[in-house]
Length: 215
Image 1 (tube, rainbow, N blue to C red):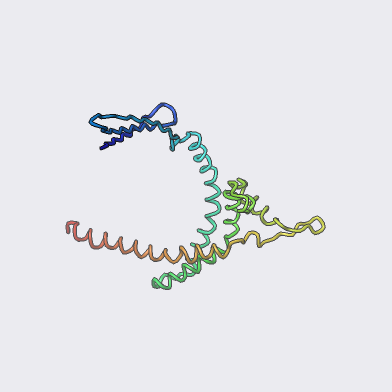
Image 2: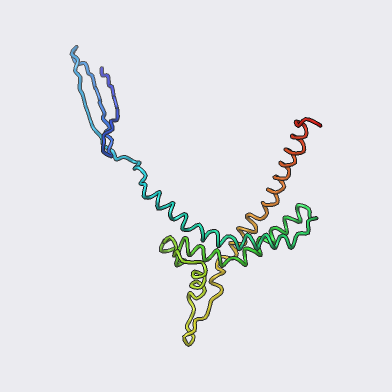
């Protein structure tokens, strides 16, 4: 006849390791005599979580403020052009389906025209050489116009000392941009607007009119 008891507990030290101490007690009875066997084993494992370095937070915060002007400059052309096109196309008497079509059309045209700004932003903030095979290098950090000029002449041949611009470089990924802004996002804006108007009318016309005292 044998009885076994196992006791496991952890003890923290000041260092980065944790000691796990395992106690195993085995009790056996032989010919009426009881014999106790104690087995103790210590297991060390490395601490999985390291404290966050304050310098890392400072670096992320500094990079955010450094990249913010580029994000704003490259986003504004699309937003302004799309708003202007939609105000030009819409007459104000369209139903929700007609407004949906006009909004998608304006988004597709604006996304196509402003593709160079998106290409420049990718080079500035993400990958300076546009080569994903060698990893992302955090971007070049240059100005928008400077990045556009460099991209425009990438891969061009010298003709008598004059480099031929390659406009197609600035429109790389234009189809994906149309699919994202035109098909992926633009169709949802009228639906959100309709939901906002419905919620506004529900609160102002029904809820408030029923609860406000009548004069």
